[in-house]
Length: 446
Image (cartoon, rainbow, N blue to C red; front, side, top):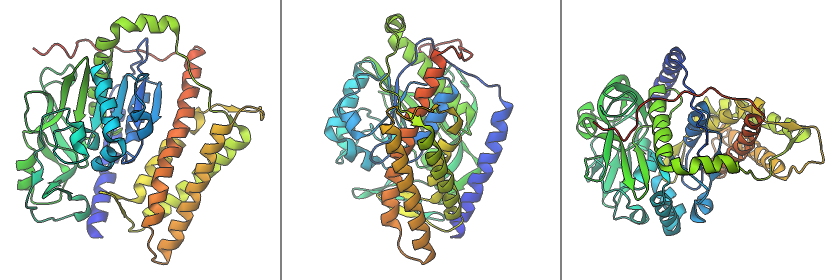
């Protein structure tokens, strides 16, 4: 109980401080002439952190986003330029995608696609002999936080370790850490920056990867779950971010969450990598795609009635989630621990974009998809109500949380699809964003 409160206080302190620092940095907006199409994985095993990539991509002007479940990945990724897999339960992600998903990802990257894996998404393609991870052996690098005998845990035992055969993947430290960016990286090269770590891997050197950053130290906001000396042995000097060429494409693996919205230096590194690698691979196709134009599917049409009902449900859900956050609730779902703050993460992702969706007065428009999003919002609100009632009477709520989190993911992905359709429509009508292009290419490694 006390350790959970302590961790929450530290996380709140980090958020406030980093947001203040972010406001002091010059804003950089990148809008390439031809936009890459990014697919963000939101299927089985994915947690809430994929919403951070939504924030990052939108901040840098990338509006062609799709939200993929495991079936979307398995059916092929021929229309994508980038596939993003963020945090969550690595085993659950691998189980959901299966052999078919692994082959689809391999074919996608080898044909010139970009894969960005953060935290669980960085573990996924690493060398493993265990089912179902062995189907994703795209990178030979090994992790440095694997042990047969766990050290004593001080804080957050539910976040400290995960079984891995006869061994354990363990996490000696979390929250803010320092990494030193490699000298050749075209932005923040040679600098030490701070990024958040929530269970991501420290990687050992390997001939098939190019390091982009190494773990270099801890900060006053680092939260040690065991002896700090053990954390130092596991992390310091090990690889925090790396790149792997694969066929015509590339993989970018991030142990810490460089994409977290409160850590702008990490955001800039990811955005620069996307810009340079996309243009390197797709340079010959850009003019052709510009001439053809981008064709979109049928728009998600929110009528005024559906929109008002949806907005009301999200507002009410936020109030319920805030109330739950004041309680000492957590749910073990698979190998991951979920708290009410993750519910708020989804709801706030929607709420802060509520003014960016086009709403139609015409009630005869096809609003089937919008109606489905509303039904999910109603279901989420009902589940939150039932969780609140059950927890108040000290009843078990894990089965309700197991229903709620997949529903939250699907609802958020559906809303964001409609939101970015509206944003792209506004851009097409002449609302232009400023474009800032950095000099230098990742290929210049001198």
